[in-house]
Length: 334
Image (tube, rainbow, N blue to C red; front, side, top):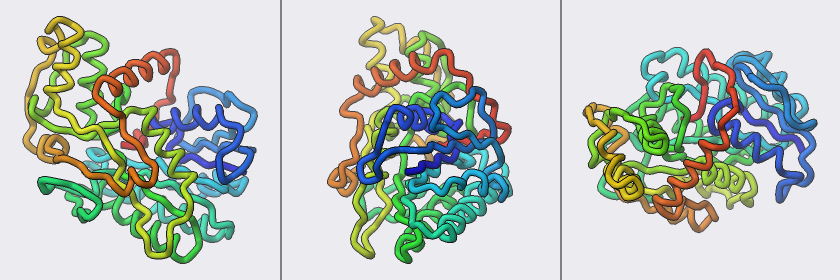
């Protein structure tokens, strides 16, 4: 079977590619013969004979044609222009997040083998302000272009699945931590800045208050959930195929306190707060989350804050020595 990953040089994409390389097969698909990775650029050559790198603009038809040869049986669509960048550059966000994604769906329809497509959606589809409780019946109401783009592709994914063109499943990702310092244009990056600074013993200034609440997931847990989405059995006709993933809900103050407990109170002295009302309203007032449907379907969250922080430390150790290529448009998944 052939696997395609778009946005493969992003933070999540690189980790997913590394996990795929370590697999001989995938339940429900058989032996993995080819892993095609597509992004604007790659800094390092393939590390496995099955890997095939396609460097180019995902919005370009020629690049999309190249990445679809050989014909994929499973697609992980991660490529996107993140929240802040999509707000500041509307044409770019529209081109990549909507037009290029629609081009991918059409190309998969035309190839005719009904591949599985795992789409990395986002909790940005819910917008702000949120109700006091979010569950499977909470309706999307995006207030940013990025969230609107994600919702539109969720709708199209469901329609293409209904028609039998693909086997789609969308996972709404929370904040994935700890992202690297190089910004991808995501306004929610402050959680990764905080966690990295605390682990490295560095100072930081945050655009939210200590009381800000967030939904977080470690990188390793995110990859587990993406692979689980790929192996899910088809749902009955008409059933939802978009899952809001379970996440660890915590506050900025709790994250700092957890590190204070290990540093005799030193961590909190390194954190400064300069709240931005817009950013805190959109990304720092997340209520309790009930992701029952996702949990029943086998998706998982990090069990507690200490586990998430330990996984963050492990991810930071693992990334030492890697040199991701510079992406001119920072097309990495939020």
